[in-house]
Length: 346
Image (cartoon, rainbow, N blue to C red; front, top):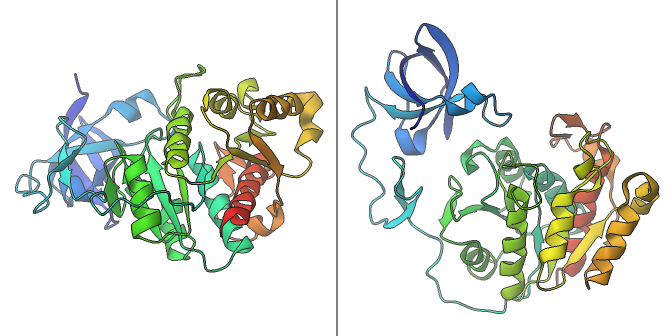
């Protein structure tokens, strides 16, 4: 059963599209959030039902309760007029959207796609693209695999505000973007063919789902995303998840997330790494991992990574709780992928 509790809003910040709240729940004050697009705005004194699962479990990406319904003012919603495609199907929060798909199919597209596995790679990817090629129309397709909806990404809001992203589409089970799509392939086609993006970045939203196993993690969605891009005729760059500071051995060097995707891909992609990545070979086996990728037909390329320039950009410089200085290789690898993508744009 859902972990639902009834509470009263003590304070509410006027923040959109997600509203931060303090809710009194069984004599305890707890942090909560409300997705305004789904449940409407909340005000002080409103009676609400909240889902307490994430906060009770202490999840890193979900340190708050989520409003399930506002009993005081949230029962009069009418949905989106004319919408008929469902997101969150047959859950109590199912809602209809107007999908991006539906325009004339025109393939092959030929424009490049960058696939990444952690939301923290998005900002350095987008920044590196802008440094290499000014004036690009860069779109972001958010896939499954993350822990939070599209509207909760401060990174996306910052990139859109600075013009480093031109659009944000949430595909498949992901929701909360400026546009909604039924599939990743449909989102890519709409963005590249209909919205005229020069390049698309594809990856999960904030947080990541994971079990520590080879196949049970959100990063594996990159496999489906890369296959969709390749099938649409798009040159595809896989942003390597690399780390010089992750305490978990499976993510040191070239993460097992990236290695698994490279092993399972049915067609070759370009894998971008920063210059000198092989210097970590003795410690983390990067050299052997890159040789294995080449043996499978993937193009492993070294691309420039301006880590200090990115540091000065004002964009996020933390990943999984670590600073840029504590995990320089993570940011260098994402920056290299942006540079490699820029080289593929006609």
